[in-house]
Image: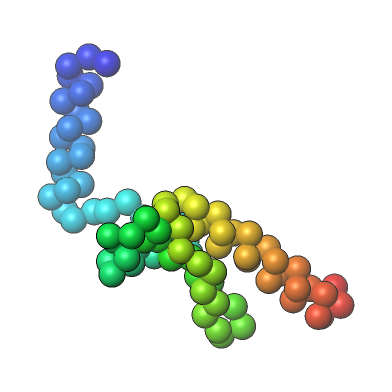
Length: 85
């Protein structure tokens, strides 16, 4: 990259920091501050049929999100079987 491009990127990042913008976290993943000192601070959970189902704790947000997606598919399949679709 050229110096101008790098400067432009830094301006954009600085602008985002100034306005308080934070990139969105993966769906189904929550960082638990009380577990920050442990090796698995990311909790995966899903709300289904008005109930919150806790899936587990993971090392990264991506791992927690993957567990969320897997559980979502399982629950959708289970619901389809119940409804006879």
